[in-house]
Length: 186
Image: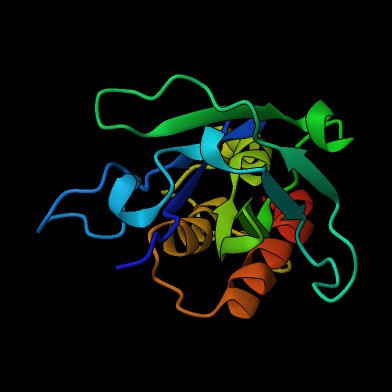
């Protein structure tokens, strides 16, 4: 079988980690991993290895927010996974906004392109903004008319985080709704 990149982003405090979980080729458990059988033994075999990043609500047909060079690759862990750490400043931002992010990872070796695109949901900023309204909310008192219940906003974000929403557009709408209504909490 041919090499198949297995990317895994994970939001951190003010950035994200990107883990290449392609792993080592192993017959029969990982036929698409790095190894001689698939002509690429690891990321450093690529002529170029890049991660293109689009922030929430960007036009995916337009240029990315940033293209990150993944070479040279870090030392792999015991599972032969490679991990990079990026911060908001690496993306030209002050903070990582909450929402649905889009990524494309691409490795090129000898004019052969290996690529994968994927979405990731980041919610650190909206969760941080919800902390104070949640601390002030008394669950035994009903909300005043015209106010948002901080617990309901929190539950909406948790539904998105726990894959309770199968649609990326709907997930973004929920994150936007919560972000825009935090100021209306009782």
